[in-house]
Image 1 (cartoon, one colour):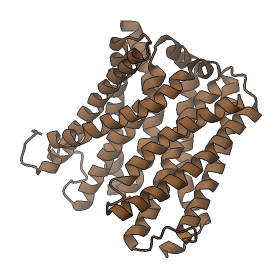
Image 2 (tube, chains in turn orange, red):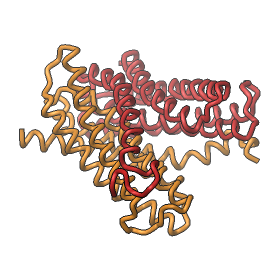
Image 3 (cartoon, chains in turn blue, orange):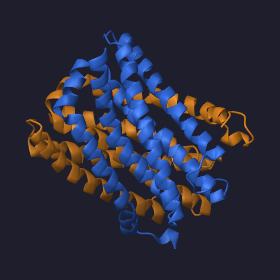
Image 4 (cartoon, chains in turn green, yellow):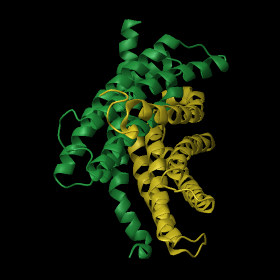
Length: 190
Length: 190
């Protein structure tokens, strides 16, 4: 019976998901604490300012895409095949647009906060970093998430149980990694 | 894959973008609060990688614990067995589990963050990192429990479905509180 769950039952049920996100968080933290990233933080004003917003966006964009595909599969209006279905295609394109739009928005408000608090910063550099990091995240998250959901569904796994851990793990680890790539690329180009 | 193709409105690209972008933009603005805290600790963070390692874990775990607690309480609400009372066995069990999970995660993270920090040339002692991690983790658990119970009760009284509204809001509030608490404790301990 649901209502009879003890603290121990809840603990045991939740521990695997928490541990997955813990390991992912430690990986992300290690990249964040690396020498290269710390140099980036010192040389690009605003990088720490945009970090929480950038990481939260991964969950918002791709978590909701996952939930949408999962509902579509459950309702039978999306087929678990790798074909260009119109609904699946639309959902993927919309997520890409959402991810890129919000990434650029984050760069702009970060610059706004820097300006409002009397700090100097480069809008071009911040937008460049967010475009690179947002684009790489989109490509990786969209391809991995869609594949994992469809393959998992075919094997009888409930997509609702896969999405959370996949989005958290990939989003955190690769979010920070792609931020580093963005810092590096814009540093070389600009 | 046209914006106004044959598929129903809910799966049209424009409609998905229009609903998600304002939500994500609002969320990003909110996240600037934790970004500002990170930015104000920049000089400490750059010299102490252990603290940078703690940041993604703190953010991720806060949201995870909140979503576990909220979704379990809201299931109870749907089943009609929710009651705001300290003797409610589900509130007791979930509270116990959240504190247990927080103790486990933040104990492990404290040790791991210290070790990674040592490898990355940090100078904080194990005792300091572990204290920061555990104290901020347990305070966070308290915030998660209080916010979840209040939010689920509020959505019950107001007649909202907690799955749609409460969980995203509480998860994000806990993410932000996580960073605030972490640096509150950092100031006291260091």
